Image 1: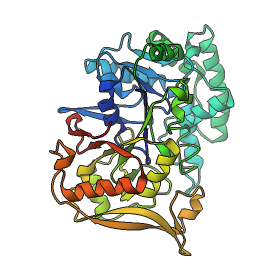
Image 2: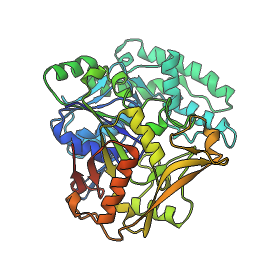
Image 3: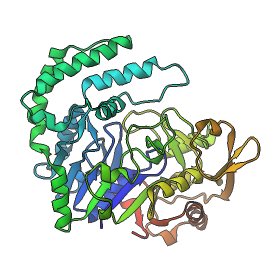
Image 4: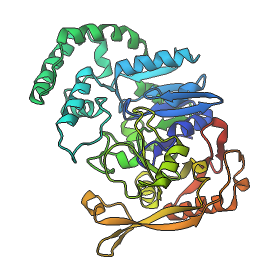
Length: 425
C-alpha cells in the first residue's frame, strides 16, 4: 500500500504525528516538497521530537527515509538535524538518502528572502519564514539553482563564488547587505564531505523499492491552502504540497499511488499573513491557542486560530482526492459549551459560496456561515476507542464528514503516539 499524506488546511494539522503512526506499516518514507520552513512534531512517551527536513519515519529503526527531488534543502539546517537525530539514538547510515536532483537553499537565498520581505509595503507582506525557500524555488524555475548533485562536481566552489556575485547585485538593488564570496566558500567546504555519503539517485532507489514490493509513504509539508497553484495566492509557499506533488517531487508514477490520506485539525489555524475566514480574535480563539499549544514548531510564532472551516476542507478533498481523513486535536475542543463549523461564505449581496474562491478580494466581501453544535464538556484524551467518545464529540466528527466527504481513517485525541485511534485505514 503506497500512501500520500497531505495537510488539508494551512498547515500545522498534525502531519508529523500521523506520519509517525502510519510509518509502522511502511518501508520507505519520502519527503517530496518544501524545505526547512516546515516543522513536524512527534511525541513519544515523555519525549518530543521536532523535524524540519528529515522525514518523520526516521524515528522508526530500519525504515528508509528519502529527501526527494522536489525538496529545497538548506544543507546546514540538514546537517544540524542529522546530528540531532543521531543524538536521539537513531542510526542513519544506510537508510537515509538525498536526491541528487533536489535543490539547495543557499545562504544568499536566505538573505534575498529577508530583503524582499522587508522591501514589501505594509499590507503586501507574505509572512515568509525568511528561510530562503521562495528564492530557492525561484532559482530552480529560473534554471540557475544549485542541486545537491552539484556538490559532487570539482568546480562546485567556483560556482558558489559566481552565484554570490549574482546574488550581491540583487541584494544591492534591495538596499541590503552583500555577502563575501570567499567567506561563503569557507562555509560550504566542510558541508561537501558531511553530506556526500547520503547523496544518491533516489529515483532508482524508489523504483527498486517498489519493484521489490516495498510500501512507500509520501510525506507532504505545509498544506493544500498553501499550495502555489491551489492555495490563497500570493500568501502561499513556493511548491505543491497537494497530492499531485508527491509524483513530481519523487519521480514516482501516479499509477503507484494507492490512496491519499488528508490531515485535518478539527478547528483551523494559520501562521503568517493571508486570508482566514473563520479567524477568532476573542476568548474562544485564545482558548484554542492555549489548549492546542498553537505556536509554530519552526518559527515559534503564535498561530491564528478559528473554528473548523468545512469550505476549505471540502475544497482540499476535491483537489487531493482524499480517500481517508486523519483528524487531529479533537481534545482541544473539550472545554467548549458549543462548537461551530463554517459551512459557507456569505457575500455582502447575499450569495453564499460553497467552494473556496480563487479571488481573495471576494473573501473581503464575505462572512462565514456557521452551524452550531453542542459541545461535550469532558476530557477525551484518555479515550482509546471511537465508540467510547462522548456522544456529542462523535456527532461533531460525523457532521464534519458529512460536510467534507471522504471516510474517517484516523482520529487523534492527544499529542502522544498512543492517543491515536485507528478507525478505517
